[in-house]
Image (cartoon, rainbow, N blue to C red; front, side):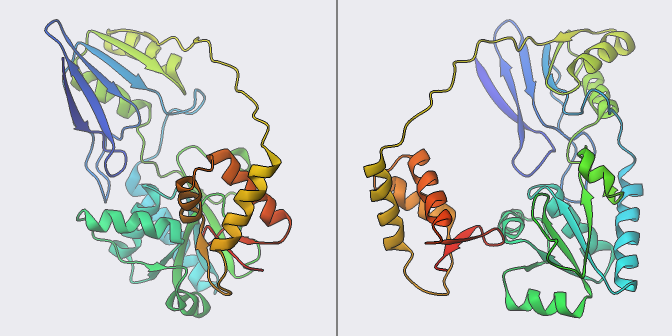
Length: 317
């Protein structure tokens, strides 16, 4: 067989896989976006015999408003916050939507854009691959000055707690918001994933003989493909026996050794050590991942280390 990758249009580097044999070709498409955005092109279409397609939308929500309408509403809301001397803050996914928000404000306003360090790291990857983005990392002194002036936009991960920042006004930017996010009434449905209509257009252009759907609104999608497009479609069975997870009892001696090793790394006052680096160093010493995670949690509970969500790192209390 031959396997070929095609751009999925979802986030930078996301792909679909086309599997070609002497009998047929099959396309597996998980997350995809079938419309152009400010930072990506719509998914490529590979005509196929069988299409395995993820229905990323929930079964009860199938349509998203036009991107141009959502973009205009986002900019209008942000400018309104600035006028009220509040800092417009957007909670969103760190990859994809986070970078598109940066591009929106780079394109349609002259506001500075301050982004959480996690979003900044991913934005740098986009920049390295030719996507023009201008932003300031929230962990820098320059970012703190911009926030104090109040004439900037802040972009953070969805689960980041900003309640301690009284001058921030938060809106959520996501495709399918949670009930708690909906309750805030400041939600903008901007998505890096296709809704039902986009998926149907994608199927129509791919011209498959059979469509197998999975996850999310898989039954809804299969029904629409069958009835509207006249293509045989059904939900891909997910009734697969899963092994029961094994509950591992951590050896107290090994846990103590791991804690001591980590404390040996974190020695400089006023310096933050990124979690991913500490984990990588401990794994390199032969400690298991579960053991390292528990050691970090234990040290935090003992107040031997202090964890920061902003930097995703540890420091001495």
